[in-house]
Length: 118
Image (cartoon, rainbow, N blue to C red; front, side):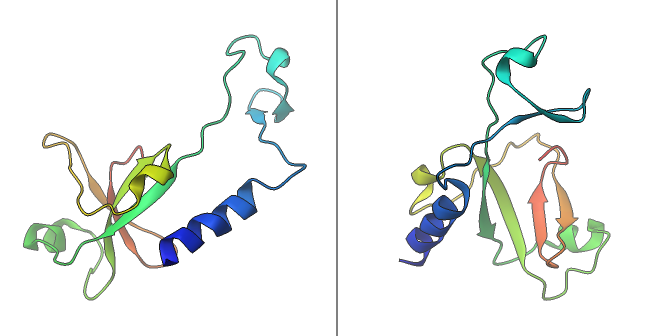
């Protein structure tokens, strides 16, 4: 399937032999080893995968409050996960009713609906 092929490409791109992730120190402006940190030993980088769920319809409130012209643009609800392998067959998305979400324009022109922090 197309999704499986995409995950294979990502795996080949990011899990190649001879490479490893490193923690970047904003204090020294360079990568640092685990034992070089004053705090946070044992903490490793976490890689989130974004799951894009296309919005088939956009509510009128989104059109008015977007700050960008949605027109016929692709709008996606975006969820982040640490375990993309669990997302096969994803058919729905639950949102926090009291959450604060915004519409963010990506460089590709797509509109992502997510929290500002995300």
